Length: 195
Image 1: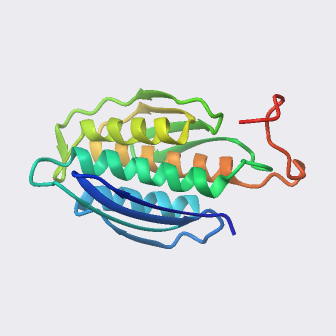
Image 2 (image 1 turned 180 degrees about the horizontal axis):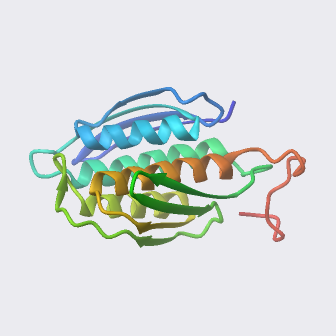
């Protein structure tokens, strides 16, 4: 089993994250932010990892630190579980339709961080969560996981549907990228020999 566990404590947040890349989609998540919990539960369910996550943050200030630092913790646990990345497919991509909208995600666990975020939202908040924090979540994940991550909402109107389709596309892309490629024979998936 490929597992990663991270304890991340700062003056702003206290986070415990453990995940199993070879799980079955079991989630035990508590960030104190209802809509964010919902999105992370969808991520776990559709990526088929198992994840236990508890975030305690300075939500009396705002939700920024909790969201950003949670992304750091998930990324760190992922990289720890991937180890040298031997045998993984490395790349993943997926399209997700949700009612009237369609979103796409492409990921490469390349060792180089780069985020492309093409998602326009018409609301300032979904539930209690500022919509600008979704960009911050994926930016923090990208920087810490050192991956290329391209997320685009191709079309859509309902903001809930747009964000949910982005998280589901991210989950499915992540799942494909972390899968073991039986033809790789425990090799690092790079012509350079390192990622």
